[in-house]
Amino acid sequence: MAYNRKETGEFGEKLAAEYLKGMGYSIIQTNCRLPEGEIDIVGQDGEYLVFIEVRTKRRLGYGLPAESVTPRKKAHLMASAESYIQKHRLEHFPCRIDFVSVDLSQPEPRLELIKNALGEE
Image 1 (cartoon, rainbow, N blue to C red):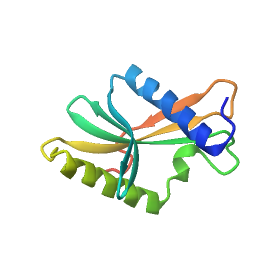
Image 2 (cartoon, rainbow, N blue to C red):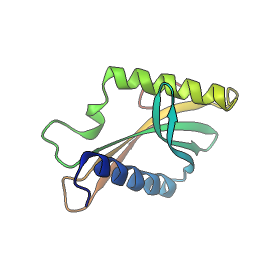
Image 3 (spheres, helix red, strand yellow):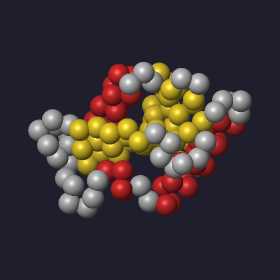
Image 4 (cartoon, rainbow, N blue to C red):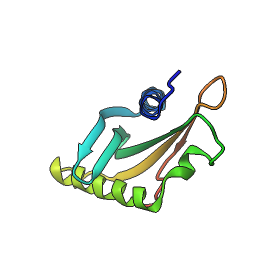
């Protein structure tokens, strides 16, 4: 099991990628770094190009993983998604931002997918 913050995040992202594949997503890229920020996972779900933010927690004392996405982080996600779309000339694809919440506080990890988490397409 991962112990430090970076290892915990990387472990959660690997679990999330496998989880998403099991849900029918195709994984296009992971840890995509852009000037506006990082996109944890870029994937495709049917016709949608999906930008996925993974939030992993080992303890839930400060709330659920998805609750840790601040307004500032949401703005960075949107800016990063726009940058990715422009860089790769993908304006013709419908897009959305999903969250995957990874809870490592139990013996077995619990994952939850929140589609269209920002409510915009």
